[in-house]
Length: 88
Image 1 (cartoon, rainbow, N blue to C red):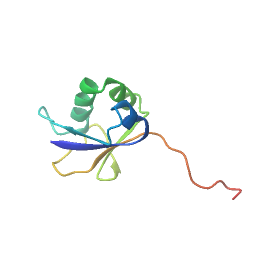
Image 2: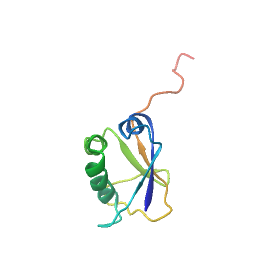
Image 3: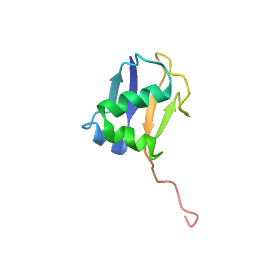
Image 4: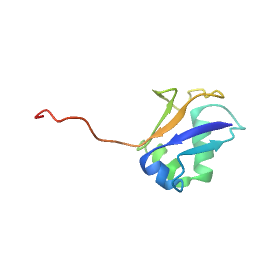
């Protein structure tokens, strides 16, 4: 079982759940996780496919072939803005 942390629009698309617990039975890579998400949460899967949401594993941006182990921290990262402008 993999726990995926959700933020911003991904949290909203999952019914305001902060985390999802997903069972990866057909593999342990990010692309397998995306396949499970596309089945249960098609709008989130589409955002990942369009590269509008990034997947991180253990606080590192992950690629489709990145391996996920039990206990890894997995998060879906929507675009965000912030920080100080140059004029501040």
